[in-house]
Length: 124
Image 1: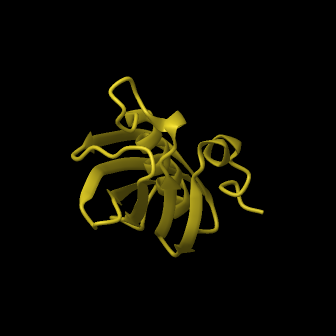
Image 2: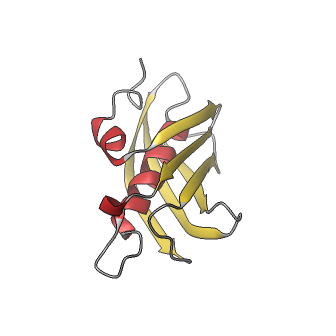
Image 3: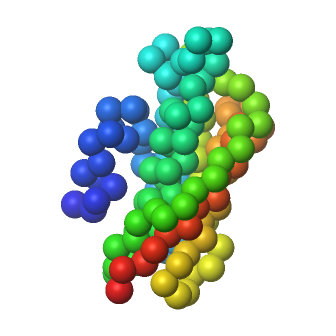
């Protein structure tokens, strides 16, 4: 069982890993009322959790552990309860101690909801 499969917080938030491959991961989250902020839009922390979990899944597809050391997210389009969002993470540089991973989150229409870029420290 991988560390992503044991991620209790991601599971609690409803993040489901759909696919992993070398330097790649795809996950989804069905937005529930509990994911909403005071404006009835998806809370940024919920989307960050989806992106961060997908980032971790992609960064940990190798024979070593990787942990986040930096992350940045931009929220581009609101979503709300009932929406399903999908995150796709791809490694930008697959070599060295530091790995950059880009994550795009889209809604069911294919519109970009948020973009995330994370830096992983690879422990090998």
